[in-house]
Image (cartoon, rainbow, N blue to C red; front, side, top):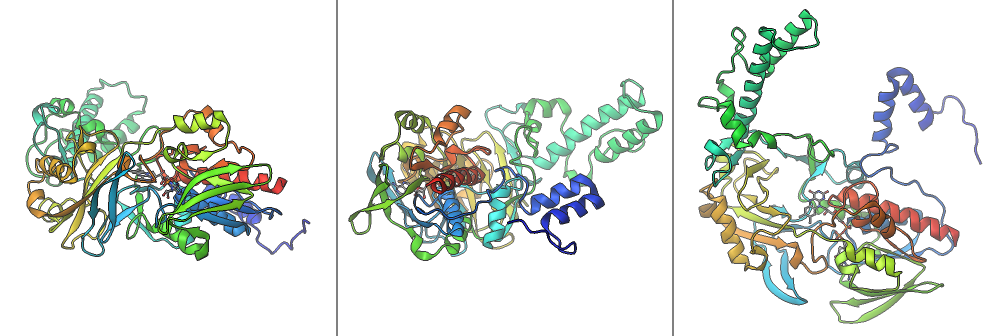
Length: 521
Ligand SMILES: Cc1cc2nc3c(=O)[nH]c(=O)nc-3n(C[C@H](O)[C@H](O)[C@H](O)COP(=O)(O)OP(=O)(O)OC[C@H]3O[C@@H](n4cnc5c(N)ncnc54)[C@H](O)[C@@H]3O)c2cc1C
């Protein structure tokens, strides 16, 4: 029943009306966004109410999507349970640190085993590692769950470009600082524009006064000489003469200097990371749920529904015992690589759509270094190396600056790197050291130990993030078929599946669907 409130009570609506009076629509928009009423990249978190008569739900998988569903069903008072094959939450969200064990999984058999022996406090995020500020779904949960975040440095001006094999013309096979490329490109460009305006050679649609202001801006933004408007070397660009414009253009370096991408909002500054490792995010959900709700080491083997319920059979991988549990509904938050192999009675169209989803061939390698030489010798603090070396993204840690040791991300690839996937761990480490030494000769001497994860060889994943799918396939995947709905990132309606925001939005979608179905009875 709707009751009218006394005029001195500040409801959300009145609060926004008053803000609108003071600051106009834009102030209302930013305030609504911070209270989660507006869509971030994942859309709006669904506001659900009501508790259905039949509310037993089994969630398959405790990755980010499964945890989102569990957390929200918990709030609604459902009788839910999460079955997770691993002994930890997070799925792809995995931070490797001291004691982490990983046995590769190849053609159904166990392969090489690694045990992480790094000092306490050091880690590498072998799955997700950065959160764009536009990913309000993830960031709002971090705030709500009390997961502290810090800035992830996605671009550091002192980092290097290094292109080998003549790929950058005269600038090939040498280390060129990002700040040099930025300063020289901006300087040369502004000099050309300022001089053209001086000579009236540019048809600028501005008044004489505005032209003067424009030149003033070009001078200050482009480090130009105030008198002759020429770009000259300056102290904070670093030592040496500027690179010539034609040399820079041939290098192609400048084409990589853009923090705000044209097509999505995923790399604009600042980006964030949870303090202490990305796994603090799923652990935040785990802390918020009653302990008995997640069953670990529970490898789901079949999901069979009837008109009255769903039976889920799982293997307890610790005891070897198989158990069957029954529920009213199932939300499957598994990778499609795994779901496609499980016995499940959904339609042929659904099975075909599940099979069509591909998962990335992603790999990462953390290199524990005895000394933070990139900081001490090269003054690089976070950010990445821009290179054409077969290392994918090579990155410097955005935590524990100015301490003794640190973990470099020596390799981050999202596709095949030669035949590395089929090589031994020692051979993969040798590959990374060989190529990284071209830029950082210290890397071999300072290496303490490495840990590598090639996601195609990880049990219960068998691949990295789900590939983006056409709208029709996503629509198919998100349909509830009687008592079963899929909720993992591959079904995301708003954001990309290669971001945790995609897993959040997919979880929300499945949550809404299962709740609506349950309320219907
Ligand atoms: C290398 C890499 C880098 C990435 N970088 C970023 C980034 O920087 N920022 C970002 O936001 N996102 C990033 N992502 C994407 C992000 O990790 C995913 O979008 C998200 O984690 C997917 O979550 P999910 O719940 O859909 O799937 P998953 O994490 O795959 O969860 C599935 C769960 O199901 C469980 N499971 C599997 N089989 C069974 C079974 N038989 N029975 C029971 N349980 C089972 C698994 O153990 C797992 O816990 C990255 C991913 C990768 C691989």
